[in-house]
Length: 95
Image 1 (spheres, rainbow, N blue to C red):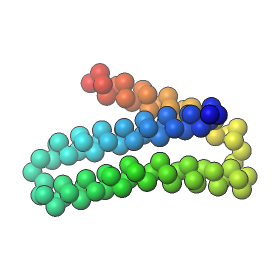
Image 2 (cartoon, rainbow, N blue to C red):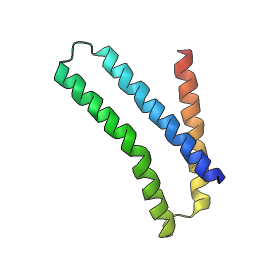
Image 3 (spheres, rainbow, N blue to C red):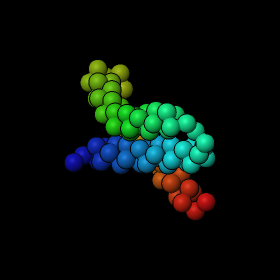
Image 4 (cartoon, one colour):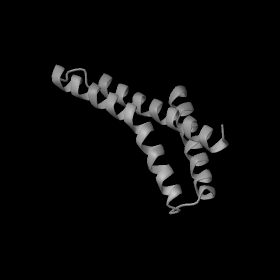
């Protein structure tokens, strides 16, 4: 597997975990929501978590194929996303 593919997979997993943690924190802070609100919130969480990792790579591949952005430009951005995601997860675990 190429390094950029591995970096993208790791960042997508970390971002999905981040989204799940935010959704769970929101759901726990609002325990008096109606059952309909809870259900819609859960459906929205599932749709976003499932489709976000599929849509973003497809868009990224299309951008690289059309030469709107070079792959060497993407690597620093991906590494920065990974670093920020890891630092956020660590800070949330210690809080």
